[in-house]
Length: 136
Image (cartoon, rainbow, N blue to C red):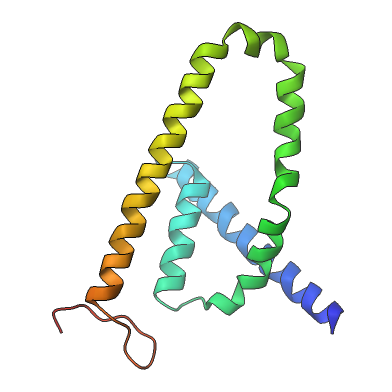
């Protein structure tokens, strides 16, 4: 049982990685002004919203990745320690950039979340789980 869940999770991670690789190649090949991971997130969202990909097909793999997300930041932390003197020399601008980008991300998240929340109340799901517009 545990082995089956692990295999399913790893296959889901491989599927998510495939979406990333394909999206990154597309972004580079088409010279898009956004990175491949952003294109991949949009593609995955579109696949999930259109029910081409079911949430259950990627849920365990995504949870596995999110559970271990902290490990992905270890190389960045090691790099920051290696360049401690350079970071110290430019601390003010770096701190300002971090604060401004964090606040901008929080505002953008709040705007998107409030719009999704508003659209949920205006266009409730039909009994089969599909979304319909409020004009129908």
